[in-house]
Amino acid sequence: MSLFLKWKQKKQEKEAERVLEESISKRKDYWNTIGHVDGDVLTHLLNPMFFGGPAWPSGRQTFIRVQKTETVILASDGLSDPFQSPEEKSRKQGKGLEFYIECDDESLRGPLSDIQDHWAFDLLYQMSQNAAAHPNILELFMKHDILSIEFTDLDVPSHFVNENGEIGVLLGVQSPSVSVSLSLPYESIKLISMKLLTPNELEYVREHGAQGRRQLAETFQLSKSYHITMTKRESLI
Image (tube, rainbow, N blue to C red; front, side, top):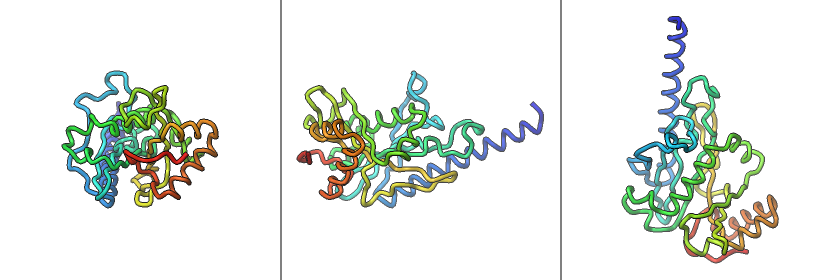
């Protein structure tokens, strides 16, 4: 490799490192305007991508906790990191989004080391891994503001699980306090909320598709439950 190419590579690596650090800082600064952010992040001792899991843009697979007065937010923190390779998808904030779930479960205020055993973290983790593996996840949200996804084998409160063990989640219900986007060094990213659905609400989404998702999101707005997953609530369908 010529001296020029080595110099160019070093320059690109330094730029990527700068943007990564700034991206992490900007996300944390934003969440600190919403609530109290822990000094430490939630992460794995061994990165799942080394065991066949999907790779995140910079390799970092981390999550943060934001404690508000009445609720707690868990958010992914790394899907919008710049890509690890300085030449890979240049000047893009990774997947262009981050996911979060806001919940009223007081046990989420316990020791940070216990949070990874909580069903809300498991739900967020599974969603984040799905997004990391999807090649066009941002395009889906650009086309459809409100989406839904289904999971099985997650230990969420039983009244959110249908008779077949299926769990529905509505994605993108607007929050009155959390912005829908956040400006990072290369571009703005989307902040996508996650809300657990009751079996009746999930069935409604299945039957009515995109229109059903929009109508359900509007119903949550009118009920003032918004995007928040209340551990005990009545079905709105």
